Length: 83
Image (tube, rainbow, N blue to C red; front, side, top):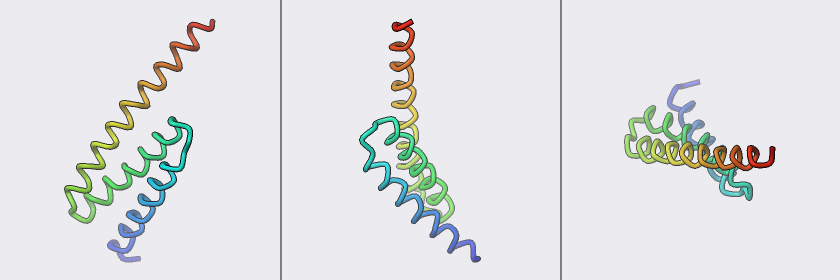
């Protein structure tokens, strides 16, 4: 399969994953799925030479990581208080 076609499919996959993330009611699941989708978009953007696509999605990856760390820290604090 031609490389350009493979990267086109990566772009479609990224779109589907981001769309799935937006249907999540659980914020942790939303952040994880969105992180994966944005990561795929970073790879896609770099592969096709679309730096704006890669950069904005890299920023989204950082935001998702930031909020996931916060969510897991809060969960750990709650767990520690229960014991």
